Image (cartoon, rainbow, N blue to C red; front, top):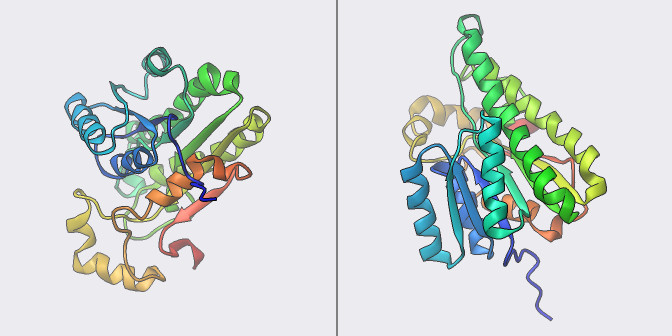
Length: 258
C-alpha cells in the first residue's frame, strides 16, 4: 500500500510574514501537500498576489489577512476570521520577523523593543490565539516557530544583538509552549534557518565577502537555496511528526555544528 506520509489535504495553515521570501516558499510547500493557506502580513497587495498564485498553482483555498502582529486585538480578530471561514486551524508557521543591524553600543531602545515585539512577542500572540481559539478545543495542532541560527549562536559578520536576543527567546518560548501544550496534542517546534537566497538577499550573499564567509563558516560551503527549507516545514506540519515536539532544528548547512 502506498502511503503519503505528508498529506495535508483539507488542513488549514496560517503562515505569517507571507508576502515575500521564506514565508511564501513554505506556504506554497504546504499548499502542494493539500493545505488551505491563510497568508498574514502587513502588505495587502502582496498578500493578494501570493494567494491568487497559490490558488492557481495548487487548487487549494486561501485567505489573505493584512495584520500587524504587534497588535493583540488585530491578531485575535485575524484568528477569529480564519475560524469563521474554515472552522479550524491545524498549522501555524510563525515566520514574520525583522532585523536591526547595528553595533550593540549604537542600538536604540526603540530598535531593541521593536525586535522583541515582532519576532518574539508576535510569535507568542499568534500561538496564544490559535491555541486558545482553535487547537486546544480540537485537541490537535502543529506550531512551527521560525527562529534563526542566530538564536543559537553569536556572530561577527552582521552585528544584530536585538535579533540574537529575540530569536533566542523564540527558541526557549518554543520549548515552554511544547511542554505546556503537549497535553492537548499540540506539537510546538522551531526551525533555525541559516542564510537563504531570496530576491532581497541574493546580491549580499553573492558578494565576495559573503562567499568567502560561506567557505570558512559553513561545512556545506554555500548558502541555502530556494526550497531547501520546505521539506522541514512540511514534516513538522504533518501528522508524521506526531512524536516530535520541543525540537529546535537548525537548517543552516552545518553552520551551528562548529
